[in-house]
Image (cartoon, rainbow, N blue to C red):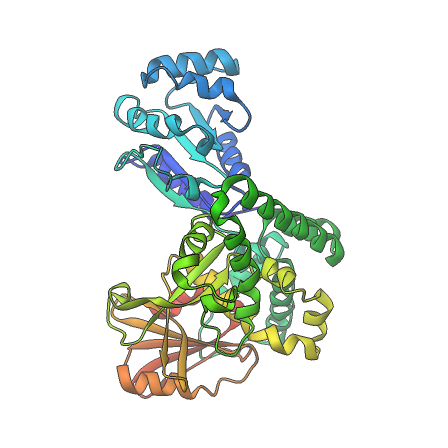
Length: 439
């Protein structure tokens, strides 16, 4: 399946500023597969060193950080030649060998011509551990996310639909020829999500039950990770927060409230557990900016936030919402419809490299998302249906006069002025293309 990260890996390969590359991302989002695919396509050979359960590899790094010696011994153990400029050396599950992470500094300084990529299931968590001497300034980083909606559509064999809509102008309504199948695929995306195994299962079987079985296995693996890799003292807290996320998202005022996680628990009791889930890539924390100015990060309130899951399909399964509920849009869907749409948009913006926040004025007005644009901050209002009457959006534009903004819904494409803000009405299924209209 085609992934957008492939283009980033190609740029890294050819960059004059290339350093050993750390690829982070939530467990089972496809890191190992995409790196091996990249190695097979662009190099004479790809030598994979998997540190999970392979102590013999770790022992090579115990003596010193002489990269010539390390390469010689790796060639002996793997029975493969490692030739700078021709070989991709892939350290998988590198978090299991902290000294290999430290060694990246010496690969950068003493064997820069060798292409080295590293990845790991919980690398984000491992890099926060005190026993790892991290090679600051000596590595490049890329983060891989679950498959975006655009990648999902492409994987389903509808890349032509993406090509058609990529340059669509706002003065022409999108005909049903395109809008109907795209809306159907968006529902499928809410059901299947972007975990590669679930997407591949959907492509192979078109069976929602098979997809659900895959996602339940993934969630079980995450639960196992909690037990194996989190500090013992934080384990019950991590599980409490993990269970609380879908419940709190479904509420009208979906600010995350620590006291709702477990009766009697305060933020100070649960913050470390929340951070562990963030470092693992399982959740995203969307912070409040009450008085927006650029850069938004300078005005964020870290104590007031929402929490979203890294994958909308996994959110659906964790919320116990059946696929038929989404397909039929029955009464049970009403409670979660807005939460799914928001979680979807949040993840799409993050996949585009945005750093989203939200705005709220008391209990009367809210903008779901905003992020730093080229000229000013850009507000994004999300509606799960085709109703785009947004009083909060108008109030926001009147008060802060952003130059551009977006309303995302099931309504057709369009453009208008809201106060002094050029506003683009985009169908939710075109969130992946938002950058075309913000320029």
